Amino acid sequence: MPNAHLMQPDEIETIAKIFVSLGVKKIRLTGGEPMVRKEFAEIVERLAKLPVELTLTTNGVLVHQYLGLFKKAGIRSLNVSLDSLKQETFFKLTKRDKFQQVWDNIELLLKHDFRIKINVVALNGIIENELLDFVKITKELPLHVRFIEFMPFAGNLWDSSKVLTAQKMLDMVKEEFDVVKLKDEPHATAKKYKAIGHEGTFAFITTMSEHFCGSCNRMRITADGKMKNCLFGKEEMDLLGTLRAGKEIEPLIRLSLYNKHAALGGQFSPDYQKAEADKIENRSMIKIGG
Image (cartoon, rainbow, N blue to C red; front, side, top):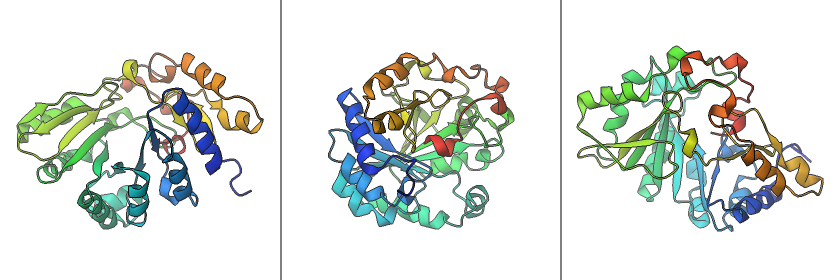
């Protein structure tokens, strides 16, 4: 079997059903890029049968190919990763000349009334030049732009000086726009704001400067079937291996949740300036799922 180490569509459905039976209300497909997987459509169709909100995070390149699938599956919201509105900077960051394709697909989704969040990794030295431009696009478009503080992961060239904190970004935005704070939902990872008179909104994900671990209710299943109870946690529960051995996985799920650390996977101090990526035991972000 090709890619036998990965969860197969039927296994994804089986594992998802167990999580839903335990109270999970929302499932997000992430990557890497979920749409490059050959069985993507089958996976979506299987998960769409469950009583759960289904959504995904994507780089936006292939969205136009699956618009019909999304509608059929009841997917009404997507997160699109987009770290720059400038074609040259986009190419520098992604090594792909696909900015226009991504932007065209964002407009296509809006045309079909999808709710769109744009995820922007806020790199110090880059985001300052585009922060206000991202807020400006919310004036006419009903987009929700989320600025994500840079985080330490294997292989991402972590340096604490690359972090531009949410407070500094907010101060910059307030110099240009009249801003109001919006109510944050329970268990929200983002602090939401709106520029007065704008159609859309913006937010900050303050993982490094003000973590939200106390209210986080996220769990992650990697493509090879390992459960992570925290984005930064090094501990993984092998759900796929256990399932293939014909054993129950619910006890492992409960054990994983019981063993969750109080903050940041127990791997580093809330003082992000002391975080050392080479001492953090974890996968790269692309192998965890954002």
